[in-house]
Length: 128
Image (cartoon, rainbow, N blue to C red; front, side, top):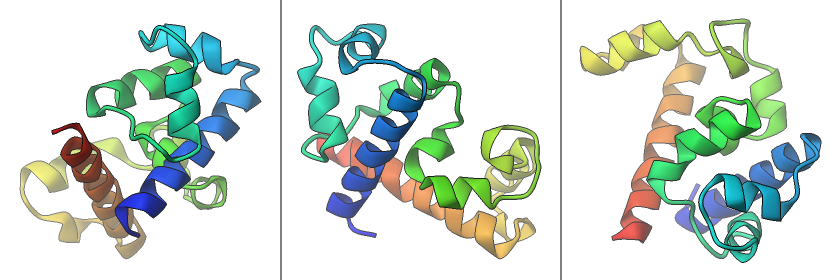
């Protein structure tokens, strides 16, 4: 997935999750520290990336994992039960990352981890 596709998918997921919680763009914007809703609108339509430091806060506000913001509803709903939204075993992933050995993860989780990592790098690159 290239940078533009990643921004578009993130924006679609953000909109879907925001609307599912009955939040307006303005309410989410204020909760994230923006002065108006236009920043959220630009993210949702894929014109802007969300700053890396706001990803975790966005996930907390919407009551989801950061991963759920980057993956489609169909991806998240097919994951096995686990320790947080989306069914990802957080401790297993942390151990694999800090030990530098993601081979301990099954193939779908390796792909998810790499996709999430790439999305964070793309967002960071846009901020610089």
